[in-house]
Amino acid sequence: MARKLPEVDVVLVGFGWTGAILAKELTEAGMKVVALERGAMRRPEDDFQVPRIRDELRFGTRTDLMMNTTVDTLTIRNTPDQEALPMRRLGSFLPGEGVGGAGSHWNGINWRWGDMELQIRSKYIEKYGAAYVPEDMNLQDWGITYAELEPFYEKFEKTAGISGKAGNLRGQRIPGGNIFEDPRANEYPLPPLEDPLSGMLFAKAAGEMGYHPHPRPAANASQAYTNPDGARLGACQYCGFCERFGCEANAKGTPDVTVIPVVMRNPNFSLRTHAWVTKVNKDSDGKKVTGVNYTNLLNGEELEQPAGIVVLSAYGLNNVALLLWSDIGTPYNPATGQGLVGKNYCYQTGTGATLFFPDKAFNPFIATGSWGQNIDDFNTNWDFDRRPHNYIGGTTIAAGGTNGRPIEYRPLPAGTPRWGTAWKRAAKAGYQGAMGIGASGSVMPNRANFLDLDPTWRNAFGQPLMRMTFEYKPNEIRLTEHIAGVINRIAGTMGAAQVTPAGPRRSWSVVPYQSTHNTGGAIMGANPRESVVNKYLQSWDLHNLFVMGASAFPHNSAYNPTGPVGAMAYWTAEAIKTRYMRAPGPMVPT
Image (tube, rainbow, N blue to C red; front, side):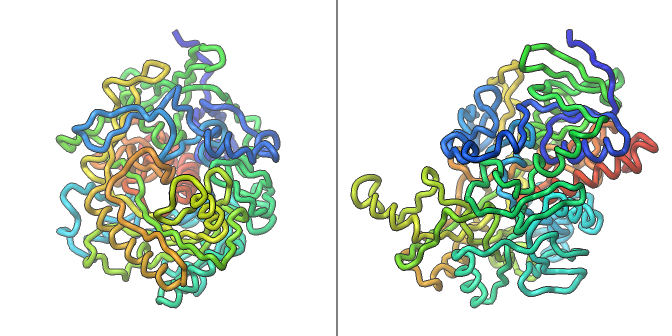
């Protein structure tokens, strides 16, 4: 029997970006908030300082800031007819664990997703007709518009200290920025980062081909910055230790540096680490949630935390697992297309080329996670006609290396021997003389890609593991076929001595790292027939349950997901403060 604790106004499950934002906003409104984080406490001043944080073996290779797969993991398969097997070590994606979550170790690339994403089905049908959408593609609008989210995008950018250059300021297109973005009310909080040599070469070549290069928006501060809450960020040191690492200079906009220190000072807030939530509890008639059960990992005690509002603010995959473990909503059935929880799981695709220049020194050890130049001509450019290539979605194409760390960074030309003198010679030349051009591509929902509970494998608590069924479909294969050609044409104009060309991505494997951009499973929408949560990320079935993060995304963009994740956290917090607390109940009519 779990020991029952005193009731609070809000309990948060997970304490990364979304949990920290909700905690700050709701405690400032006078609400008593408890956050339950299954990982350990982290403080930048204790955990992210040199020389400790530059331990590439510990953090880069052994992924010390990430999920421990010996305690909990997923089973993986590509198609429903296969047997799923456990992911024994992290590979394709790296869910965070501990205070700050994945936001502690992200690279910092930060985009706004506009109406081309938020109203994707309507937009494509309007331009290409209903027949253009494949029958097995569960494409749907999000139930929200860019105009509604724009102020909250700006709020998140100011919180995180985003560096960048506007390309569409109140409808005016501005050369040098991303002219294809939806209109912004104001400039970025900080100017762009410095450009690496690879970015400059790519921008020159892409511009001469008629494309529109611009700096990538970055949560790496281009100069010292104090955000609206008084959090102070240092200027980026270009150290090359961003992804998989905390920031030694407090120059990366992370929850640990920006939001968490503010909320930790609020007497209305309490944080409990090493708290593994096992179930969301419902009342007897199933109309409301009443709190959560969790286990204290330090002593094994089981506890019940009652609350007036429950917010699932863990990594998106874990939010979906908790819904399924708690018997909330109807699990998705790919055979019938019925059910919603687990539906529309999406990932990302991509491709890239490596260029070798014997006469150049790229100094890859000077780097940030987000710098470089990007083109959006094949992504948010609505004038780009997709019909000749027959796909839905798009890609960013960019150049700007994130690191030159000695264990992980080893660009080698095709055909290089795997050992010996020739390998050493190629490794030495490639370290200084290589650069990459990479594409990040969208993935559309498909009837056969989904999340559910594995019937065989269980975690350390005896709960079924989440089972992921995912494979690239013809839409994504055609996308990478097209974009590989674009990359290779750009690379062919840059004068490299040797090029390892880009090629299409035809299948997905969980083994090599690709991106920590998992979306879907608890999707948002305009009605309860098509979605788990409404536009405020409020459960259609249980009005005092909110499900945050990228699990709400009905599809996955070419863009990194953190921008809309942060914006929608502020959006939901505002709705709870100004609407729900005044009149508890559904905020969108059913």
